Image (cartoon, rainbow, N blue to C red; front, side, top):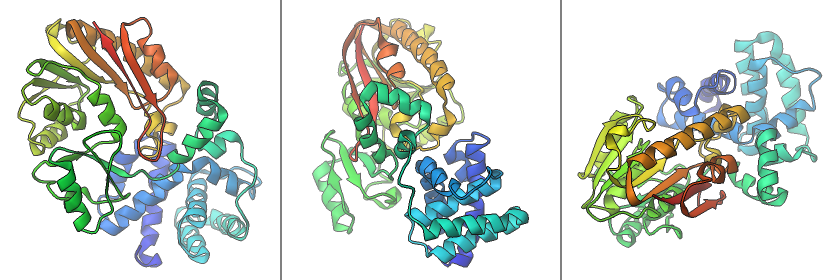
Length: 406
């Protein structure tokens, strides 16, 4: 972790990243990339651990330190208290170091509040975690989302899978070479690895594994992709040599799996966001997806492709509620109104994609959200062959996909 003296600047950056995410609604990966650009590998890993840890455990952390406050602190102090409480409860940092580092951060940001932060964190360090948390605090999700999930899945189920969402996720990859041989190579490097039980391509590795050091990275032997997403791609039926559209394709993991599943097919990766296309092309080049053509286009306007696709995979934009352990910022970026707005987009995209599909062909609608309104309610009224929602578990993310017939 480096010396506590050196890591002080990392904690300062962590406070600034958290402010961007929680107050200014920036995406975590963008804020971390911008503010952590000049850090070395070790400090960057610490910054990620601090920020993502706070976001995953936000509601329990807030309930923990708030017991010792008479009034709500301003934003800098609040972020620093979240950071300090996270270190005290979840990291192997000596209490005195965790407290003093946070006090030093406050002395630089807001000197008048440093005494309050010192007093509150000392009380947190001296006591136990609060015994009574509200259900949504224990689940680590916003209250409105907890109520939706409780009504849809039941309180016990939500509390079970929400604990998974508060822990870092395994690294999961889709392996495009012989999986058994590749697993043996990885294991010989001293890395604990196991094959995924839900996809014939999947391999699970420890949290924080450096993918670029794994065998075959430069040669395109694998791509990072959760088992749940792999299962959704495997649900698509397509003729061996047909035209397959992968809609909302970036960053390209699902496109690559389609390309390896259907090597004789012509695959068109459709992506609207011009900023994401370079990375999409770079990934497809590394993964040797020679049968893929990238097209910048709006999924809400595929009229030029009317009734021409033999199969379509639609990975629609969503609230990311099934992958909160990987992207814990999503629960702060999407409120109830935002989800309802996404549902409208999802339905319109589905309608547009069906117009581009040939008669008697298959479309798979997929989202990394487990919200029923983004799942069953979107596909209501369509010719659904089958649908599957899997809730988050240690081995995979939460996901929903439906196979539709035109």
